[in-house]
Amino acid sequence: MTKTLTIIWRSGSMMAMDSNVATKLAAAALRKGYKVNMFGYGEGITAVKKGQAPKRFPNVGEEIEELAKAGAKISLCETCYAARGFQRGEEVEGVKIGSLTNELFGFISESDRLVTIAR
Figure 1: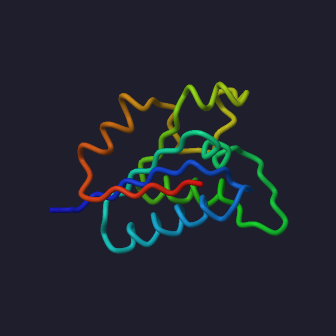
Figure 2: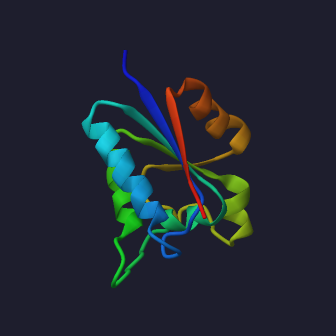
């Protein structure tokens, strides 16, 4: 039976390396055969914005897009997304705009392990 890891991240893409740690953990879990779910809320939703061009930080948006292509399920809090002025379509490919009550609780209920990365 495949084990499932859910990662909740709340820090923005340029606030610290938290989002990068989340993506590296997710990639490592996928390589080990885990099913991976990721849920972003609060400032964490900024990590999935298309068109990021950081000069001295990893491009977390591209990393998240690659994780989605590799099979990770990635969802964001719709309320957090709207509150920060994002419009649908500004997120990288493979990311779903969802909710705490549906996606996050669904992810948690099917998980063997849960990790929260936040400031």
